Length: 134
Image 1 (cartoon, one colour):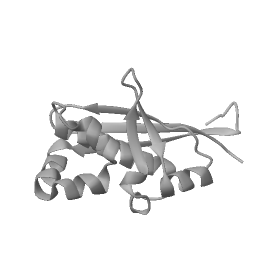
Image 2 (image 1 turned 90 degrees about the vertical axis):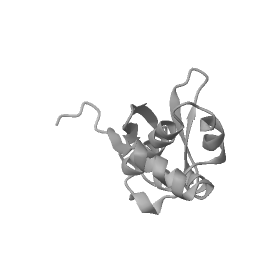
Image 3 (image 1 turned 45 degrees about the horizontal axis):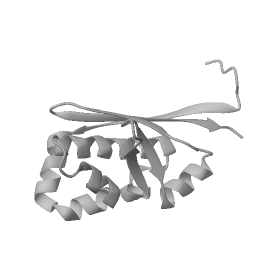
């Protein structure tokens, strides 16, 4: 691979989730699951939407994609340290807090872009960032 600017490197994380897996977790554990995985803002934004479980599944996939991008392992970062929000046009973006922000700063990861998609059975997300290499 040739790199025209060796000071920068791209980082990518991708995840896919079966929507039924999230539906069953919500049915089994209800608010306990939702509050462990999603921020109050995410819960508020998704509540009342059609395709509720698919929306949660896409955000779950996005959080795991961000964890993979950061590179510290899925269980080292609490899910609620990563929030998936949308700008006024509906474009999703990522807010990092706590350990997620700490590990991202350690890896020189600034803004993270995220793309979400879902259909009947699956939700997928890809997270990407440009990182300055020291």
